[in-house]
Length: 135
Image (cartoon, rainbow, N blue to C red; front, side, top):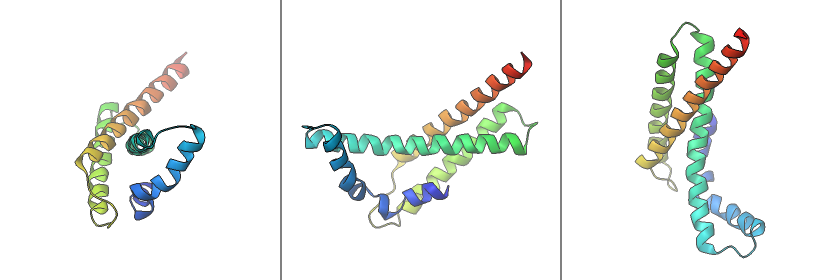
C-alpha cells in the first residue's frame, strides 16, 4: 500500500512518466510515432493500475489465508477484493489533493479488476498447492 501511495504522488504524474517513457519507447522501437508513444504511455499507465492491485490482492489473500486459515475461500476473496477496492477509492481521493494528479473513477474500476484477478489467482495457487499435497 505504501508503494501504491508513492505511485500516487506528483513524481509519477503523467508528464513525469512521459519524460522518461517516451525516450525509452523511441529507443526500443526506432521510428515509432509520437501518437503511438502517447497511446502506449496511457495504456502502460492503466496496466500499471491493474498490476499494482493484482499484487496487492495477492499479498492480501496470502495474509488472510495465514491469519484466518479456517475462513472460506469465497469469504477470503470477497474480503480481499473489498479491501483493495476501498483502498483504490482512498488512493484516488488522495490523488485529488495532489496538484499534478486527478481522481478518476475509471482508475478505481481498473484497480478493482486487478484486485479481482489477483484474488482469484491467489485462490487458484492455493488450490493447485492443495491438490499437489494430496497426491
